[in-house]
Length: 283
Image 1 (tube, rainbow, N blue to C red):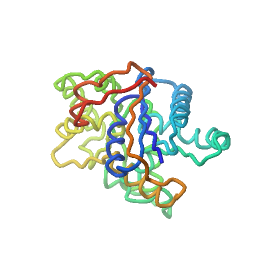
Image 2 (cartoon, rainbow, N blue to C red; image 1 turned 180 degrees about the vertical axis):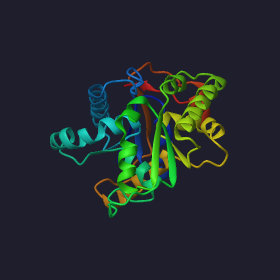
Image 3 (cartoon, helix red, strand yellow; image 1 turned 90 degrees about the vertical axis):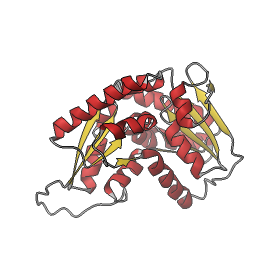
């Protein structure tokens, strides 16, 4: 089986690394749409079109299962593609294929409840006990997907999103750590000011942000738990594969990295995170 991993840039490598560790025998092909990154400030229809194009390319490269390792693509485009595009495309291909995202695993990790959980609503006012702060792109924040889906499952959790529009370009460009540190500290202060107190826990709601997770950890009050999307996604994909034997997790362990941008070795920040140079081929 070949697992495709899609992101607008290098952020999805955080999820890719967790998946490779979980399924070392599987073949992987990673696609970064760097020619069109970042997605966070784009209109919804553009995000849907770009995500569909990325999935088409990954399926053409032999992917059986695609993981949208991009919160913006997953929050804006995934459901639409699953419902209106994928069924017909699957029939054209004549083989089982699917597209999964990282919103569901993250919400399950944040709430401690399965996606299918439906609590009994008694009409009583529930005071929030925990406060989750979410750092994300502007598009993910506008979608309010985390606020909506967490509230469906846990009325005792309040959710506040903090868009960080500068961070993806900074991470893609390998900005100096001091510059990113100042930007992240400013966003953490802004979130705490809006909430009125520090969050009980935080979600890095953009896979790029995992590359600088240490900077978020330092900016937040000591001991603030971070919900890590890569590990949540890897666990969720493992459970999915157990339920779907049509996707055997074996393979030759091949790794390919494609980009719609300039094929080259990625910046030093990515190299440090990955633990080795990462060179992308032209998509």
